[in-house]
Image (cartoon, rainbow, N blue to C red; front, side, top):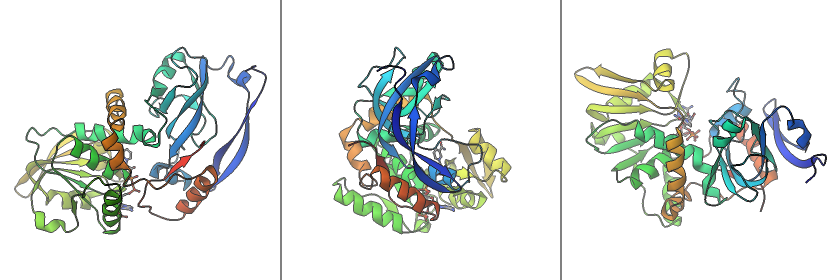
Length: 339
Ligand SMILES: NC(=O)c1ccc[n+]([C@@H]2O[C@H](COP(=O)([O-])OP(=O)(O)OC[C@H]3O[C@@H](n4cnc5c(N)ncnc54)[C@H](OP(=O)(O)O)[C@@H]3O)[C@@H](O)[C@H]2O)c1
């Protein structure tokens, strides 16, 4: 198509805690001279991440990752690695210039070398591939576990990330249980797993009975503090490990640094020694394994226990506005941008 003909599309914009749908116009000429290469992607499915909701609420100052769980199809490309029609997922760890994924057309622009890893080829633009980045983060967390004896693991926090981690560990053959501070999510997940025909989920509602049963406890709650660590210490056996996955208030500087700088620290409580391990983001190897894992039909079926039916473009904006005022959602919502 001629460089002069503008591309018209709709996108979500947010301001003051509300999302609106705007009409945008993109000229290919805008990229001339400013970016070495540009790829235009038609997003197919975009996951609504808890980070999107926090960004909308103004709880992530300085971060702008709105609409980053993206799978779609290449529309046009000036980069040799991408051809029209290819299915790609966004690698949000690559700092390129881009449109939000909540858009009918998403441009991804920057230096050719950077762009090379900004989009990852996936087998198809199916909904499960919108989870490439979240699954890569939990694979990364699982790889932070350094214990040689792979005893039972506990995932504490049954949000999307906790459930992904539970499914991944199960696939790896690790004996694993999933628990939550309240019952509703677990009940919903068990119902979803039943409907998806993926068998029961090993859920622990009353953890006290397990004592020091676990070799690794992954903490995936939306917010973590020292009290969560203390409770986890009661559940790990001596020289077990506690993996800090969920977000930590920066005012809790020691724990925050440990998690964000992915440190490992040997600690003691009374006569018990244990390890604290931070985990953040994912590597290229994690992303690659994530794509391979999502391509397994059995794994994708397991995920369907947490996915709500996809939302339309309009419903997605309304859902985000609804979520901005509410603290929780048990299901994982994904916006379908093109049918
Ligand atoms: N390490 C990494 O690389 C990485 C990558 C991505 C995301 N994360 C973090 O992973 C965490 C989980 O994400 P998600 O999308 O799964 O979260 P989510 O769906 O918002 O939260 C799910 C879990 O957090 C609990 N929870 C909700 N609000 C809480 C609060 N105020 N205090 C304590 N617990 C609370 C929920 O319990 P109830 O059911 O009882 O409400 C549930 O167990 C987030 O902190 C996110 O920032 C980490």
